Length: 282
Figure 1 (tube, rainbow, N blue to C red):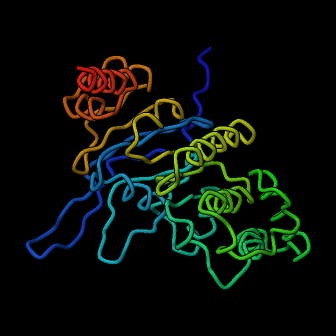
Figure 2: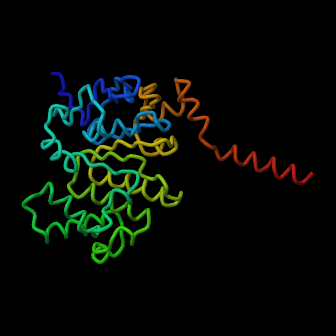
Figure 3: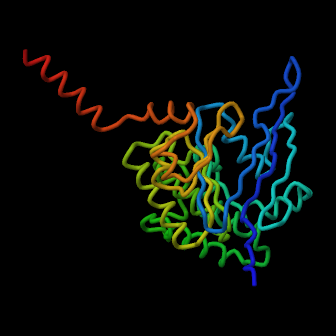
């Protein structure tokens, strides 16, 4: 007897995103296809302008004005591209949540972080009381290791550091227990130590919740540690897709090799320092 095959958590087929340009249509994403299994993790890498972030916005139906999307996108077998905007809003933030790269612009400075997390929760749990939503907000902040969450839930975004604001955004994304988490450059503008903390937190969250993860980044070192598979994009197209292990041990596409060659290596830096020291000692 043949075994049943599980439906991918996320399936993207022939996705194309087109903008109206002064000289005609411009495809910023071109015929992109990939799938993510339940609980899996996929890294999408490439330089700025390669189409990484536009892909994530297309999945969520959040493309800017003037953009057109063709192709098919499904979540656990449900066709997202066939949904109305109202239906899609029910999916966003509930089944699929996104962590953007700039938490300061994503958070409203006029409301406490607790009020914003609670609002995100009540938007998808309409029978929830204010007291329940506040409790969920505190628990979500505790989950992402924000100390003294019961007090800090009443603080405003400007009272948090950049790393803590990103933790708030992750807490907001997690409050509805989504099946899929999309993180778009989640450590941009954070120092190296805080970057490592946020990435460890995302790994911890995946282990606890079983959520699938799409991690969008230009940092190959990050995807090597965080994801099972890697999709390399260039000029709107996928030029290579492989397991993280294979991609880093045996990159096939010249662009992938160029990206890997651009990653600083500790042994190279040590060699350069030794050369400087020897030159100075002469």
